[in-house]
Image (cartoon, rainbow, N blue to C red; front, side, top):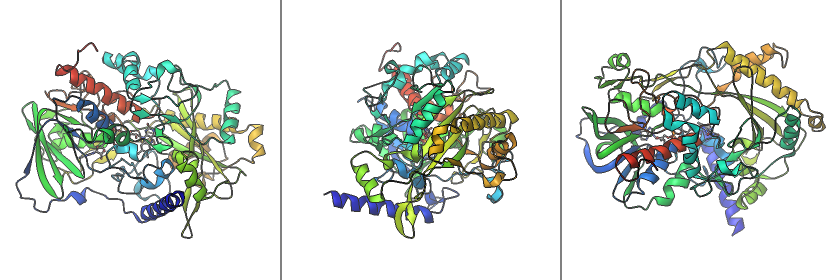
Amino acid sequence: DIEDDLDYYEQLIKENIEESRSHQTPTSFQEFQLTDKNAVPTRFGRYDFIIVGGGTAGSLLARRLSEVKLWNVLVIEGGAHGDKFTEIPAMSNYTLTSDYNWGFTTTPQKTSCLVPGIPDQRMRVPRGKALGGTTVINGNAFSRGFPSDYDRWGAKGLPSWTYENVLPYFKKFENASSLRGIDTEYHGFDGPLVVENTRNTSELSEIFIRSIKSFGYNLVDYNGRDPIGVGYMQTSTRNGRRNSGDSAFLSPVERRTNLKLQINSLVTKLLIKGNTVRGVEFISGNKKYRAYARIEVILSAGSFQSPQILMLSGIGPKSELSKHNISVKLDLPVGLNLRDQHQTTIIGWTNISVPVTPREAIAQYLRTVGPLTITQGMQLATFCNTSYSPVELVTIVYNRLGMINGSLSYVITRATAFAHLLMFLHPKSVGSVQLASDDPLQHPIINPNYLQYEEEVETIVEGAQFLMKILENEEFRKYNLTMTRDPNCRNFTFNSKDYWRCVARCSGEPGNHPSGTCIMGVSPKDSVVNERLLVHGMKNLRVVDASVIPVNLNGHMYATAYMIAEKAADFIKQDYGIIDSKT
Ligand SMILES: Cc1cc2nc3c(=O)[nH]c(=O)nc-3n(C[C@H](O)[C@H](O)[C@H](O)COP(=O)(O)OP(=O)(O)OC[C@H]3O[C@@H](n4cnc5c(N)ncnc54)[C@H](O)[C@@H]3O)c2cc1C
């Protein structure tokens, strides 16, 4: 009955928050260490397709390929299914310090993260370790980027990726039946991924909308015709519960007899002969296995691990591979074009008190509404222009549950934090993913090189000063909106250019949207995969995840990762004669 459900969720949330506090972030893949390094690998069988990583793109791809009854598909995934806790959108902050995050950190950054006290200026760059991948732990904002972004992909000699050619694939996986105020011709209504508006709006967001309208920004569907403007957040939840890649695409078809999910297993290497990939090597239960592919191997291990696996298998920059005595099979710019967005959190406080107790919030969640149905309190997304590139303002009304003196409470009890993420969308800075050694149990070396260029910082300054103008609105005064001064930048006058420069450089964080490390393009000189996502020079090896994105998005990432997988499924079905190449 209802009391049992309330007790269950209360206990679940408490336990997980406590575990998250004591969680030790791993610094390598040691949990997969082999018991006997010299043992001969066990044969794991032969499959038509092997998908490495059942994450965001991998879960959709596995569903589509296993629609073909003639084919059998093996998915090898490092993690396992999410659970009732990861399903609660508002708990995502705690899942970042749990076994659902691989736990990567960057190299020391030279032009960002200049905060005294952060050891070595390293930043955490979480990645989901689960079926559904990073959609199990992410912020869940559903945003495709601008139509013009895809036209830029097309202009790089990749005509299948223009907006006109990707829009049908965005629509195919989406079910937008419950979204309000959208450009319906830009959305899909029959797909497996349910997209909803957030289910708990606040008066503060309504004031924000009224205020920004006075600057000429209208209420828009930012996944529609013209994204510039303010829109109610679209998120992939189903009745207020997180709809991850797993729950939307994989779990519903898990019983297909031609689909095998091999979880808790780390792929360490591709088995390559000439220009053909024969299969993969992986570790599971501390034992080594080999699985063979009749048709193709597809890497969907994400922007950090797809390049790592390629390099460990001899596909990568010659100089990088030689450094680790890995024999070079193909000299390609793997790992070299890492691009990530960057975000700065700007916080203010109001005199609104939190209206519900934790138990009431859980009761609301069981009725599919309330603060627990929202990831990180996100309510609105505003895309606006600056002199250099567009920026996004994500409006947040925090209502965070946490533990205070051993009991579950709202962390913010006295006043409501009204925050904005200022997302710098279109970086010029380029970084890299490299190998630490030829040992597959080492984490890759990740250097995003955030904010290498002054104009990137100036964009953030312009965005922040615009935000302050929006917040100067009379109506916010009623709620005594008071902005928090960043302690790292207290030597500067609040809202001066130098103040925001300091905030960007010291307190900015990873945008968590890495891409480009297996970049798509025409020539093997400056790209890793071709227009159909085949690795240049290989017959049957593709990369299908966010790492192939050729030009940065003015938006978030997972909607595009799904679109890439949806298109890849059709490329593969076309290449093997399952569907007509014109469909
Ligand atoms: C904190 C955070 C917040 C974010 N918020 C948003 C947001 O609000 N909106 C948005 O659109 N995007 C957001 N993102 C980004 C977005 O979620 C990711 O960019 C996207 O999901 C990546 O999809 P992918 O398929 O490329 O990789 P992933 O989803 O990461 O999938 C890779 C999969 O491969 C598995 N894997 C990796 N290596 C191996 C191996 N060697 N062997 C076996 N399995 C392996 C992983 O476990 C994982 O399941 C956020 C990301 C983070 C970290």
